[in-house]
Amino acid sequence: MAARKKKKPLIRLEMGWGGLCGFAVVAFCLLLWMFIFGIWTGQSVLHGPTGVADKVAGLSHKAARLLAGGAGRGETRIRRQVKTAAVARRDDTSSFYALRVAAFRQEDGAKRAVAEWRARRYEAFYLKPGPDSKLYMVYVGHIPDLSAARKKAAAIEEEGGGRVFINLLSAGRREYPPPRR
Image (cartoon, rainbow, N blue to C red; front, top):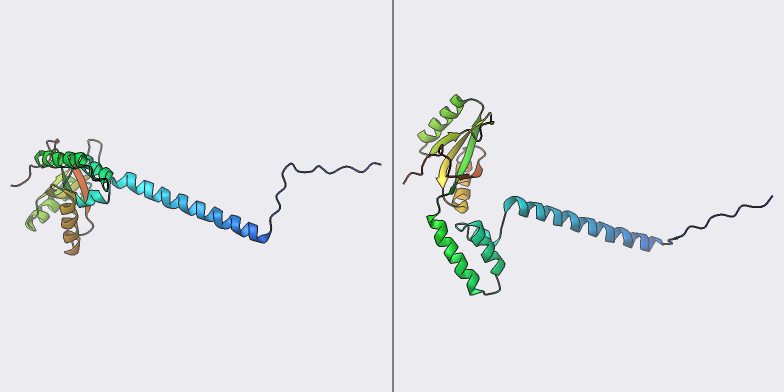
């Protein structure tokens, strides 16, 4: 009988312990980089523009993006656009920030919570977010910019008002109360 020949593999990798460890370190670094980049991208998508945008929180997102895009370049055109957007933002009443302090399944609970917040000298109101919603959301405040909303939320949480969520509401809905002047 004839002996069978063994098939040789097309590609053969030979690696010592040092090469294997080096490959493991490089693979770990690549995976870590992809994880961190993924988290950063997700946060950017979730929270919108940051950094320079936080410094100019009174501006619209478009103005903040323009300023962030031109930072470090010294472009006066972009700065003029930001100033124009800032002036337009002051006149814009299409949206405002409100602090969501509670949610109830029944309208009576929401009415009681609003009365309690008003007794504490806060501008409070409740809404049903949509026609299909089963919850009544209780909101406090009619705040024009995000930085002021963050400060007010921190103050409410410090004084024991529970967990507070900042929501951007469109002033176009008829159910929203007008801001107090």
